[in-house]
Length: 469
Image 1 (tube, rainbow, N blue to C red):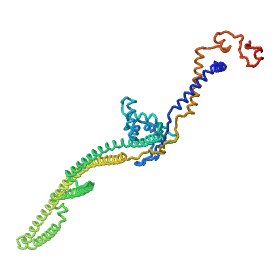
Image 2 (image 1 turned 135 degrees about the vertical axis):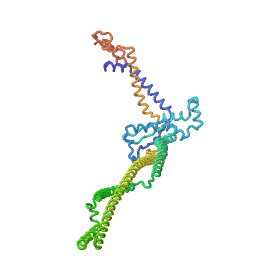
Image 3 (image 1 turned 120 degrees about the vertical axis):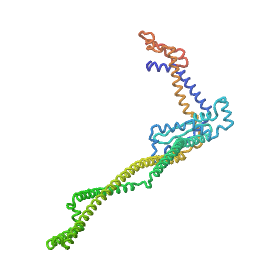
Image 4 (image 1 turned 180 degrees about the vertical axis):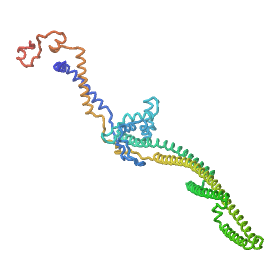
């Protein structure tokens, strides 16, 4: 169908199109006039107006999430918030509302759910573009009731966000409370094990001064043992020399008593030789000198034996001292090893106690924070503009309904005309004839209505209703 055929269709079906348009406009006007007036009250709320969590001091990233605004709109339009509004306004306790509920649902369901569904149907939520403001609108027949419902939705939305934030914190606080008790028991058990180990090992202080003192004592004993070993070795050598021959032993030779006795023996022998040369072997002086020499030699031999035995006794004492020091070093070494083992075991117990204490401190701190957050009633939602009772009704919109009816009537009339044209296709032009019959059109006869003329000339004047092309 070309433009000429479409215009011919409009011209031929103009009565049907105009009738349909007129009927549609009349119906829209009648429906708009019989509708009761509705009033729309709007309350504006601001999301994340602070931007900083008052408890943790951290910047709240909620507004940065792509689905944050959609989530808040879903919360506002949720059944939970609607039920809160019903309870807040006490709508379910009205006898008239209960009677309407019985009539509408025949007693199926609950009044609260039925009212919540009705409120949600009349609720309109619109987020502002490129801002954190959300408008909550409610449409009703009473302006005061519409404002009350809009404000109730805004306030209950605030309460719902607080509850949604505090309920998980309450559960977390309960969990951390149980964990804190268990961790406190772990700390007490670790402390009890440490105290028992200290009592068993006799540990008074937890520092390492005791081990250091024992190490210093071990080093001192080791030094004394080395010195005693050297002295014992030297004494053994001197004892061996003194036992092998007194003359070759420096300890015996350098002894003052031995040296004095040798000097006295030499003097006595000199006197004996002089007496032998002067008097003879039977002279009393010779006999006296000889007796003196023998006595001096006996004293010298006794002194040599005594000195040799003293050297051996000194060596024996030094060897005993060495053995005692060796036993003391071994005992001290065992004590130091025991102290090291005790210190290692004590270190493990201290680490267990420190780990348990750190875990308890972390859980206790987290429990305190979650408990404060669970008790916080602050909301990140603020009512920017509370709803007020509108003075002018928002509906029905007669002008808008009329314009829509004109558009809809025009479309409906065109649709009916096209439908009738498809069901019964008339011939209005040569093109239609050619399309229907498939034969060429040689000429057309167009009928034109004669012009209206009055008087005698109109009666006797020639008429030409047909024109041959």
